[in-house]
Image (cartoon, rainbow, N blue to C red; front, side, top):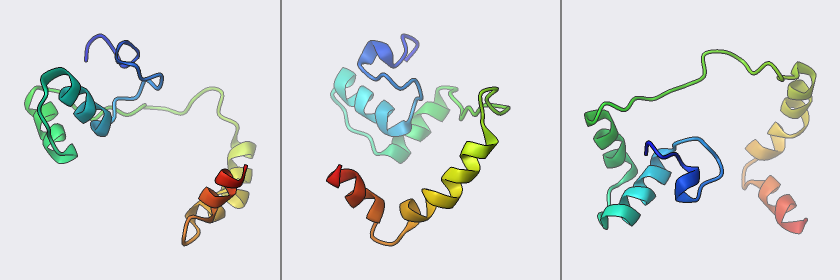
Length: 88
């Protein structure tokens, strides 16, 4: 894990328990659940990390537009936004 996600083929630099589960499986040929992976991480001193502040680049106006226009479709029953994405 200290080598980072990019060294293991993930471009996104967020360590997600599901990705760590996959990495453990690849490296050690064992299978854990996501919950089991989280327990293993905590046992070895890893903790949930979250940014302490907002990004400097954050644009409040863009965020408001997204909440009003996109979020209702994402949240819609049946995930209508998925179909929109598939249609292109």
